[in-house]
Image (tube, rainbow, N blue to C red; front, side, top):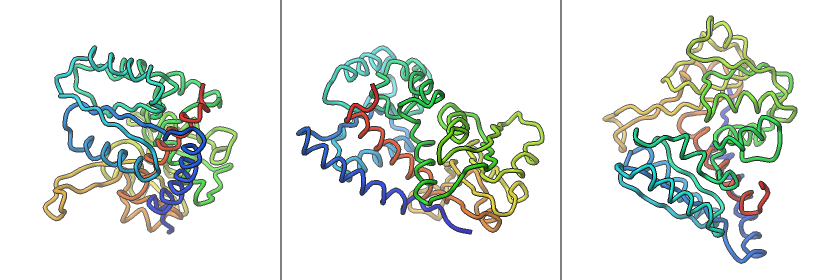
Length: 292
């Protein structure tokens, strides 16, 4: 078993991004600028946004955080997004999910200008992705592609089974892994909670992308020897043994599956770190006006 180390891969790529950001600053006189909107004070969201802001600083980006109380109206939030859409100094805009129940996340996503949608969730970007046209790829799938590239893993001709069909990870991942590209050129099976004989299907996989949101869902008896395991899950549980008061688990039973895998991502320290890299690369591409 070899580790797909997100810390190692992300640091290598962030060094490259920092060099490119410095060159952009020299040529344009400004830094790439990412704006994040955070509604409420969810602990997980606070952590994720703080990490994104910290990484922006590390690679030489400008970052801004706009906070709202949990009772902000949907219209007030949408109006702020429209204002940012018109701000020429802002290259990327993310609205941290989840949002309070009274705010429709689809309305929020569609209000963001697709040219600043560095999370890659806007229908225009998803549609362009399906047609293999220039677009912002959703940050987590993009990060997974970058990790596979960093470790020179050839995916051509492999059977990739994606477990989970979310619009954020599973569905776009299935499209990307089937594209005529590297990483890509896989035969892809997209599975989910209603899939019959799920275990038997996953057992056929050369590459497993686990993104179903359940702790240790993929077990050793679902994995054939030599499979490549990409664990997207981040499941929090309270813990008295950690300083933070919680412990993170993936969607894969790492301890037992690792013995059978050729490559595997850890949780934490795997896909989560690469997601931020995908976000940074999208923001730099936006600053350069590569998506129009």
